[in-house]
Length: 300
Image 1 (tube, rainbow, N blue to C red):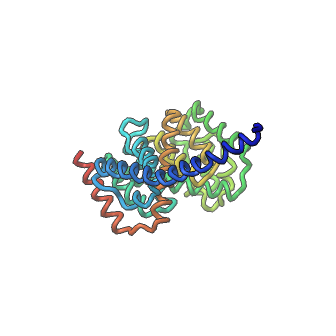
Image 2: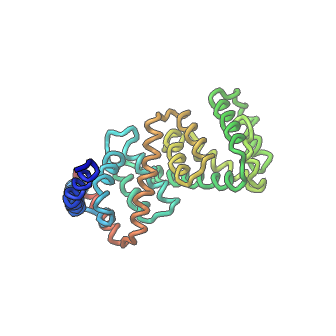
Image 3: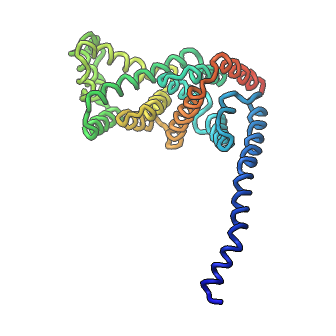
């Protein structure tokens, strides 16, 4: 018997066996996924007091991994960003998706983690300001290299600002001319994207940015305001704002790990918002389940 015929016979003998093994593997895969999913549901119930409907809408094959991510980042008390600020980031992202489910959940979770009404309002304001200037930047087709150069110049100026003007020399911001003067005094120059804003509105737009984002006296520190801005920018997505808020967050003391966690919270919020909205979860039921989870976590 030649080698070719022998090889053919071996193939013919073992083909049915291989087919049976493959079929058995296909049959056992769903069973294994179901068993792993059941273990995950039990862990979720032990942790949250219930298994929310939206999690049961996620494919059984992926629910264990999705839960692992959620508990390792959002629910983990040992991360570089505290629970309060992770939930404020989630709220800011949710508010401008917009996702009513996630707004409700992250608002209640932020309160559970110690956020007050002022901090909630500031997180939402940062989300709004980020979307506002992202719209101007992208709509004006600002050159990215030029934007980066101007942003870097601003950061250098802020690191080592010129001596402050005497109080009596500072004029109120009431129109475009006084706004440009105050912007240059604050940032060292007037970036192109601010000049692209209509002159009739720049005074109010600048005063808002200065009163919230650039204000050192807000309830949320500069570092966390910029991390909120980064999280919002990353999932718009806006390359201009991602660059600006990343560098501004670092300038305000954010670590690389905090930057990564802010981005992860933005991703997790968008992930579950997609599942919630796509599954058309009943909102009243979702709120009831959220309240149950919050009450369970309060008692732990």
